[in-house]
Length: 519
Image 1 (cartoon, one colour):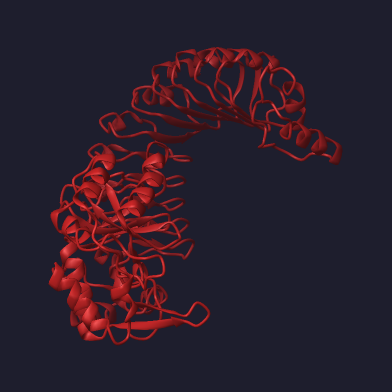
Image 2: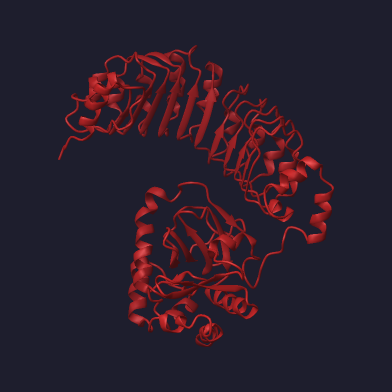
């Protein structure tokens, strides 16, 4: 380890002489022990050895990791605490992809990702101590606010340093000088300053031991030349080369008149695919997209979902406005979490019952028979029902079995009361749109209801009874409903989201309420 860092320093001495002086003195074994104790981890031996040589890099340093500065143990702990404090609430926020698939757990935050560097924009170079099923403990990864795609950059910290040394030897780097501040820094690549994370998708990763490309150059060119001119132009618009298309993680083809999607069969790295508003009838080409997580087929005439039965990583599927009538092919998708089946002719939703991971479902215009099949999906936590004009209170009572619901959205419902919600012990959010309720007082008895949204719902009876709720925190409604409620509660309610227009006088009243001090 000592020899390796010395080689890097010596190779950069002429062009980046400040690197040597920027590296801090060694950390002590006690400092390492305390850091590990706070984080509840044991750092990989090679990283421990490096900290026993240099406890990070000075703030004005040129950035050991291609311009990204090496963090001291104190800085590492500070950065780690920021993420750890946010983990419980935001760990699953957004969409995140691992490259290779199943190497990095696809999350926004993981307290077992140890930051060893930061870019100042909320992103980190880190050591992964909690890899996914195919990963290696101690692998070097990128993560952070902007890093939706996470790459295994190196299999371990030592390999990262070896890659840095080899890159310098090949001259694949450039040095820049900040004339105002009077210091030098460097970056990967010969020609211009570039953020190291921005080049990850073009590197052969993991460094030193990369996985092979999808196909060789000759094979790729032969494949590309055999495509229609329309597809060639489409692919050229996506990246510099056809390989960029083949390695793409996200592809969006919206309202392009697509009928043939055969070229997508070669996109083995796809994680998110949006094909909304086309003329696609057949999706056999997608059966080979084994890592696909999100698929949008909105408003296409596709009817057969059987080719999707092999997509074991699929988590979100939007088939709204399609010709699909049978959901049976989805029953084996163990990771499927979200399905939008709005505006379809699907009669039976019970085929989703074996999908224990299913949490979110959207359905429109259901009748009593369809509701009965929905009631079997007791694993649901979020349900959206639209087009409820023809249903009554007794019809919706069938859904009492969905006792795990956290969020419910009702559109076009006209009901005497909401007593059927009493069984929803975990319900936290209720949204109603274009609906009416003669007596809404049942909501006051829901002990966990926190958020209520009334969009274009002028006919809501006994609204003031909501003041008896012990859990309600946020109400989004019209000004008239706000005016009725604002003085009913003995605590401040969040009315920051107002639905519909307000006059200047009404807006002033609303702002006065928001600015009140309730301490």
